[in-house]
Amino acid sequence: MSGKPKLTYFKGRGRMESIRWLLAGAGVEFDEKFLETKEQYLELIKGGHLLFDQVPLVEMDGLKLVQTKAILNYIAGKYNLHGKDLKERAQIDMYVEGTMDLMGMFLMYPFSPPEQREAQLASIIEKATTRYLPVYEKALKQHGQKFLVGDHFSWADVQLIEAILMLEEKKCDILAQFPQLQAFKARACNIPTIKKFLQPGSPRKPPPDEAYVATVKKILSLG
Image 1 (cartoon, rainbow, N blue to C red):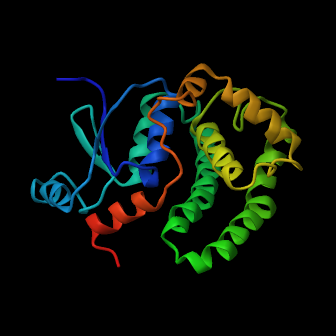
Image 2 (spheres, helix red, strand yellow; image 1 turned 180 degrees about the vertical axis):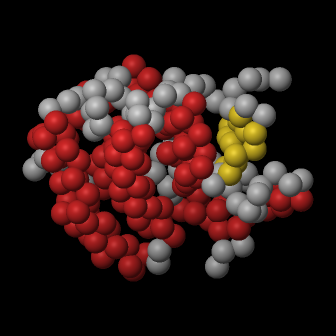
C-alpha cells in the first residue's frame, strides 16, 4: 500500500487545487482518485468516509481529512509551512484567508449563467486589483524579505502564487502596477518544488471547462 497521501475529488481544480498546490510546495507526492459518477460519491458517504458528506477528502497519516481549511492547516503544520511561532502563524493565516476569499470567487465563476460571467469576471478583477493585491504588494515592500512572512517560504506564499497565476489566466497584465508581486512571482516560480508543479504532466489541473462543470453538477445533483 502506498504511503502517499490519497486525494479524492473531481478531476478538476475546485476546492482540491489549493491542497494539491500545498502538498506540491512541500515536495510531497500524492495519488488521486477522481469522482466520475454519483454512485462513487454515494459510496463514500455510505462508507462513512466523509464527515459532512462533502469532498475534498485527503487520506494521510491514518486520517480521513475533510473540510478544505482543516486539510490545509494539517499539511502546513506537518511540513513546517506555518511559521516559526504563533505570531507568524497569525500573519500567515490572515494572508491565506485573503487569498482564499479571492480564489473563492473563481470557484463559483464557471457555475454562473453565461450571461452573467462577463460582469462577474470584471468584479473579480476589480476586487483583486483594489482590495487584495495591494495588501501583498505593501507587505513585501515594507519588510523587504523574499516571502510574505519572515524570511522563509510558507503556506501564505504557496497560496499567493496560486492566486496570481489564476488571475493571470484571466488578465495577463494584472501585475503591471505591482512590481513587488512581479518579483515575488519570479522567485516563487523558481522554487524547485513549485517549478516542478508548473511543468507539463504535473498534477496541477487546468482551468475548469464546461465538461468539468457538467460532471460536478451531475454528481452533486445541482441544477
